[in-house]
Every structure is written in C-alpha cells, then in structure tokens.
Length: 275
Image (cartoon, rainbow, N blue to C red; front, side):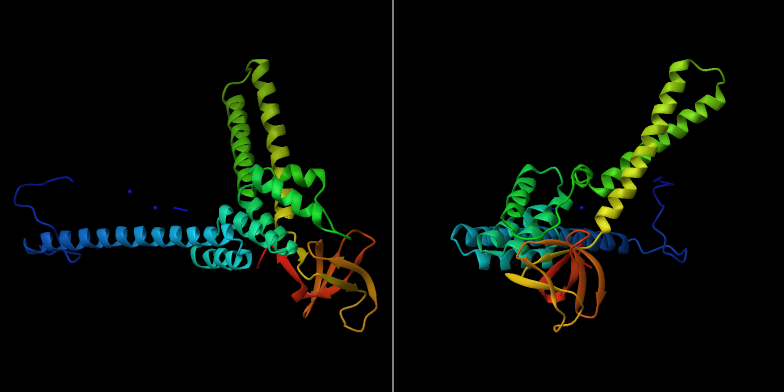
C-alpha cells in the first residue's frame, strides 16, 4: 500500500510577490521552514504507513488465531480508513468465508477481482466460493469472464493506443501516396483492432456499471411485488448473485434469468458496484 536559475549576479536577491526585494536574512528562514515542512510531511507519511502495516498485521494475526469475525471487522476498518486494496479485499473475503458468511465473501472477492483481475488466488477463491452457493444464481458467461481478464482502464488504454496507431498510419498514407501494400495491410489491421477494442471498452463499461445484488441473508424469499404481503416467486440463499433491475423504496427488483424475476428487501443483499 503507497507519492518532483539562472543567477543574475552575486548581489541578486529573492523577490516577493509584489516585486520588492526580501531581506537577505529572510531567505534562509524561508528555506529552513520549507525544509522543516518537508521533513514533517515525510515523517507523517512514514507514520501513516507504519500504522497501516501495524493494523494489517494485527488483522492477519486475528485470522491466524481463528478469530475470523474479528479479523473481518479489522480488515473492513482498514478499508474504510486507508482506501481500497486488492489484498485487503482478498483477506476480507477469506475471513468472511471462514466465518460462514458466503455472500459477503463473494462480494469481497469480486471487489478484489475488479482491482486485480488476473490474480490467480483471487480468481480461484471466488470460483470456489461461488461453487458453495445453492439455489438460483446468475453467474458470468464466457464472454463476461473474458472481458474480466482486464480492468476497464486497461481496455481503455489498449483501445486508445490502437486508435492513435490507426490514425497515424492513415496520416502516413495521406502524406506519402502509393505506399507499399503491406502498409495498407497494417492500416487495415490497426483499424480493425481499434474497432474491436472500442467494442470491448463499451461492453466492459456495461459490465462494470451493471448492478448486482449478492444475497447475504441465510435464506430469503423473492416476492412477486415490493410488499411483504406479496406472494413468493422463488427462494434464494446466501451467496446468490442477482441482477438489479429496479428499485422502489427499500425493495429491489432482481433477476436470476429471464424467468426468475421478483422483489426482495434491500437489507438482505449487498449491491455491487457500491454507490
């Protein structure tokens, strides 16, 4: 977890913002104050890093002692106070899984996967946790899994690079008419790659922004309407992943496929991505 003169003459002195010369004794004082400020910032950063490391070690120790609920609370506290981290989310998922909270474990692993999509441990633990879920659930298809191998930022960078390469080759073709045939082939390939990568960015954005409800209750009934009195449609269990379709007050309309759609209470699920 992780921050860039010209001398006119020997008599030249620093000027203030108003153009007047500062006393020669003030320049060393300002330099001293600036140096002291830099040292203070460095000390503060080092102390903060030491605090994060100490908190992380303490959470890991709780996990090793089998105090999984306390370890999960410690990891969550670190995430809230020190920002997101794939390692923290991964360890949080492990602590939740060990404490029997499957839905929360899946949510933590999914957030770790968003930050480190090619981490084999994250992917393996997420798949293992998903295999433990019972009942209706909506798992990613092959296309979604393929898109998930890169972050949205990585897809965007690749698409931008391919687009600029294609534009550059087009400019060369305009600047030097009658190029060799292979240059035209490179231009066509770059254009095709740019289009394909832009499509990947579009679908990656849709996948990234699509809201998923992960059930965290042991078992709950998905109802035909947003009322406690509405008849039940189907039952879902801890760890089920459902697509969020709509919201009315404290109720969410969710789906586990085209034929499994209904409503459940907001406090029975975790919604990703978090608002």
